[in-house]
Length: 475
Image (cartoon, rainbow, N blue to C red; front, side, top):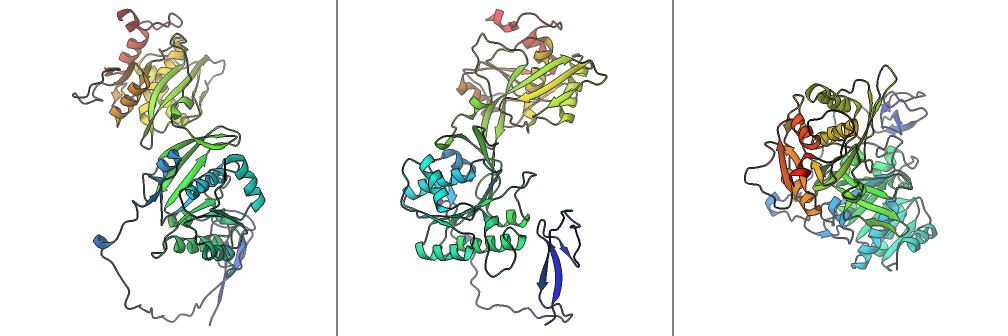
């Protein structure tokens, strides 16, 4: 049998016909490992066909999607699409210290209290380290959470046969190895073979199990390993939040059993991860009605299926340099320059000699066009040094013509504002259906940006002045 030797990159999986110092694909150094592949003879091989294979009609197939494990953590259930499907395989990734292991330990204890048997296998921590964290974040540990510390997946498979768990947690998949393969832990071959072995266990028709794997994250904030790992699993979860920060965001970049892009919010404290039922409180500053601050405007963004009230802050200052600064933590620089150009040309707001800084409270990035009007109004507020009343919100896109554009799911966003007690919202003139009415909030439709600025700040373009809006006298 003729053998052939190739050299595979352990970072990206690219194959080379000979050894060299760096990979031609990812440019990483010293990542090529020698591998032997099978028969490479030039003769055509016949492919055997299996007989008596059982095939089912799609209409006769039983769906497992409705058979879910619902935890007490509603934010986690939301991201998962309503709970954990019992024959699914999920991977969760985050930077070190974000709290993914803590969250999974809490979920394990909750599932055990529902009568399920959970196996928590760790290739990174010892049994005593896991027990120490459990004593810190759990009130009382359930006896049906089993732990095993070893990086041999063969031994983990033995544990599965021994205790027959309903849920298996692997922390983390890059640390585990199968004895049948000589590669080191974390190599593409070992990671993919371990993941494929777990996939077969999860999808066993006779004994389906839910499997959650922890995946390590690269310095570029991406899931480590081959892209094939993301294709293999049913759900990919990403937990965002720097170490030491209280607010953590869990969102799905892929979900075969729910909507991708759904976000759940958690607060990290002494007792572990706590679900945040009202995330808007983290993304807006709580102020009294009379405490009106210039440079602040509110909008409603949609993260997954949930509307979130968000504060956008801006600071406009004079520049002493030939080119003014345009700084935005929440928007791309080109996007900010586009908004500033619209303001200068369509609303006669001169900013050619002004520095402009834009950010959001809580650091959330603005991905929707619905926040454009609020971003512009926060800049105008800072430029005029006039505050916008705290009960006023802006939801609209802005065209290059200076016209307001309607945004999707506007009714849902306004209902959230009405529920939270806001009084006024500016929208595009044709943004709402003619039959839609709201009793507790005043919807103000406008056609152009100039109409919004005039309605909020009056006709004066000079800096300074009263913080009172034109409608204060009418009311």
